[in-house]
Amino acid sequence: MPGHAPDVDVLIPTVGRTAELATTLAGLAAQTEVDMGIVVSDQSADGDATTWPAVAAMLRVLEAQGRPVTLLTHPERRGLAEHRQYLLDHATAPTVLFLDDDVWLEPGSIARMLDALRSLGCGFVGSAVQGLSYLADRRPRETAVFEPWDGPVVPEVVRRGTPAFDRWSLHNAANLAHVAEGLDVEPGTWLPYRVAWVGACVLYDRAVLEAVGGFRFWSDLPPEHAGEDVVAQWRVMERSGGVGIVPSGAVHLEAPTTVTDRRVDAPDVVFGRPTATVAPGQSR
Image 1 (cartoon, helix red, strand yellow):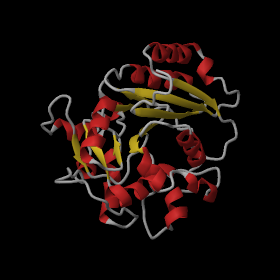
Image 2: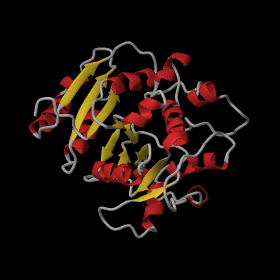
Image 3: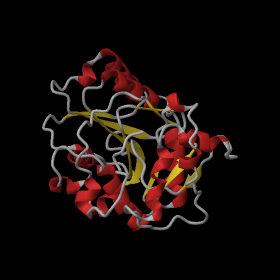
Image 4: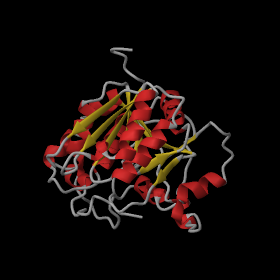
């Protein structure tokens, strides 16, 4: 329908990943229970990621399903935060899902996230990506920080050195998959839990995200940085709260990272850096 805004805009930044992007889009095509549009912004040197056969085929599937697809090229590399703001500026839906280009979503994932966001009335809901090559790697010390939300979701402050920051370890490896095994969550339902932040797959209330400035802090950062999603989420959490949900349904493709220079962590620049031993951009 002309002029129709979907319930969710899925915002995908991509650079140099064609096989992974095709897999990500295939996961979106399986999300049959949600009204969504897709915006892909390509920073590849030649800007042709969406012309590769597998990517183009999945884009045609989405369009055939009636999902509006917007393809953008954004070759000037000003950093992750600027690219996310560029995508946000092209969103029209009341909710936006920032989805990295190396994440496969199981069917029903976005519908669960949207239901949780609406039911809880918070600023964001994240589905933490799981590295399934780690299924045999159980880490009880890291999963011990799992804490379901008990009662309404309320604003909270997370910073380095606070107890809430220690939740970062929960999203390593396949930790959340192991946690979910021990929970009695009915199929199609979800359980919210407390997070330090969630990477790669986060659904925001767009009005709340924009009210805290979105990713406009990009101009305070050098082009090479990491942790931009942490800054945005901490600001949203302070205003409206934010949660993760289990089951996650988000699978990390475990491709090599395209963010190789992590010497500048955005939270350290925006909020200042107290004494700490773990950086928000730390890998698995």
